[in-house]
Length: 413
Image 1: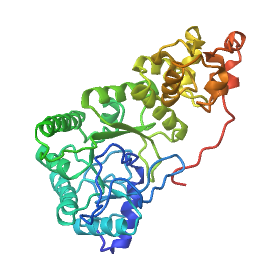
Image 2 (image 1 turned 30 degrees about the vertical axis):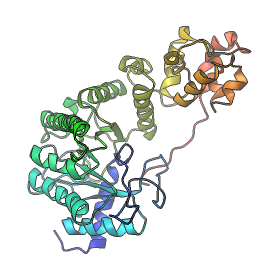
Image 3 (image 1 turned 180 degrees about the vertical axis):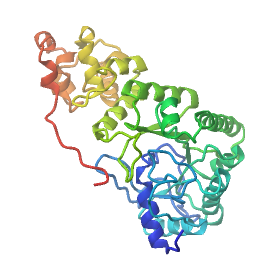
């Protein structure tokens, strides 16, 4: 590995980290340095927030410790056989960069991932030392997200959880079969065992802190994972089934979906064409339906066409169009769980409807003041002055609800 200065390493290792989507900092504990103690904050004023065109948070210093790796996963630009320029930060360099960027108000925290160099334990130990040095030596109170190495000693993962807000372990691909084909050196059982261990640690910590407030926090922002979409043959039905299983088994805060991005010198087993980024967006919408709207996996799968979510219309509307017998719903009578299935009505709007209808019957204009999707929900809703019988039964309802196509910006263009 050639000798490089810190600036050159940063150019290589920040660029290599752009394929990691799981950098959101929501859900962590509130910490700040108000009062002159410590450095940093997980929220509040004075912190720069920047977002990519597709809404991804980019206000963290997101880097790899190294882009060298002993594995040869087909989809990874940092795989052993990849012809890319290699670099490696020292622990002190990562600490210094994080503090320097934070003091300049460029970032609100650190997202640290890494290729595996030497061994899983060697790499994980270095990542733990970064977090421990920031927390203990510099009293850093900003957000820290570590991408854990699943093959590492569980004791190292436990140490990481004491200093990081969130830990994540990538399942890499939606199915075990896909992982075996594209990342044969990684073990799905070990990945899930590590996730199970973290889940148990988080649960034990909650019990301990309920009894003893002085008990140290253990990954207060929980754990998350990321899967690559479009690199293997798994369709959207398989993706949402896998995500639902991960939420249920391991208590994940988030599952992130990353559309497969073509890489230089790609393996012949990878598809030649990258999936549309809109597919990634539809999967996030489907994920939202399962987490906040009470949709089951089978219902989301019912919105698909031959296993794939439609790209021209959101999953909730697609589901409603296939279940017209359940509409229109009376906004003044329908229970909350039914209203959440009306296209155009979000969770906040439904809660506002429930509060308002205690006072009086709601008209279509009343609903229009609670949501920006009034045109979308007209065919699906009955109000005191609105009954869309003919509109709801139109054969051309779907084309009327589809918005004009827009070109999506490239993430890394």
